[in-house]
Image (tube, rainbow, N blue to C red; front, side, top):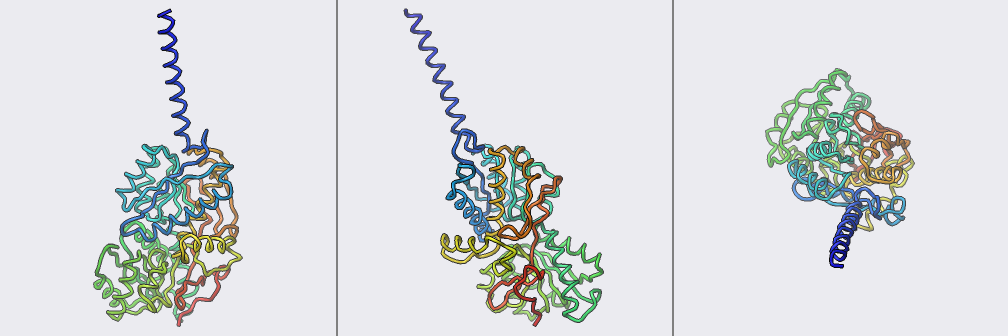
Length: 413
């Protein structure tokens, strides 16, 4: 009888261990959706530090998309749970991506606005077999590495450069009464992968069009003095200035240009600082007339961007003010694409999600950004996202080119 009790006790212990393991597996399955009522998705953005303004604005778009999806019943009945990660620089991006994947057991991540942060975080995702969806960073090298676990929904920097050169060639030369080959074009850019990629690609495309680049000035986005850069630009006497910077350096460039008497007929900003209402608030009337190439903004042809008005209302209701830039809209649209593809697969399995994404197609003019979706099978880059040209007019950023998305014609007064 004693032996029977010992055997019975041993069997009970074994059963408890097995049940505990099963329960543990089920508890940890929120990241892939099996046996759980949630899908856990990492959200990696710079939420503190120098990049926090647009990092937070980008995260807000993801947050709004998730709330909308969850309030409508979730993805095939399962709610999305965001696991946040604050990555203020590339080093933090690596450590936070590692934490999400190896400690939080997250199998797919969205992010990240900054190209340097994205470059670092996607490398970690690739090594660890997690799928990374880039919704806002633009440097081409994020997808040029042809990683199997990286998909980008927003347009890359090279697409911005195409708009720069095409606008100069097709519109600016005529408006300034010059032949394309006689135009003097300068480039000024912050020196991370974001600014460098746009600058280098613009120089390459300019060469093909016989457009004269008279000077290229790079600088650190953390600088507090651009006077030497501005004086070099002033000496070069450009007709057009292509500028790539974040908020603080964009503001500094505008103010010091005014102080040092540098005035250029056409300034083409490229996303970043020139797109934000904070830029307008900081420089006032100096913003008026500046062009900016970027993700879709809010004064745009609504026939091209169905769902944008609903997004703006949801944003104002949650955050108490208008969206600060189109980055929130781009991330909102991108997060909805991610959720749609997860719904098709029914679980978060990186390989299955990528396979489904490569078959997933959306026509242009059917989303809140106006973008379509068609991922390149080699790079993972969406080929149907495009930046548009906007202009600051009386304190508002108005879409002015190309004509089918514009609400006003570009002004050169």
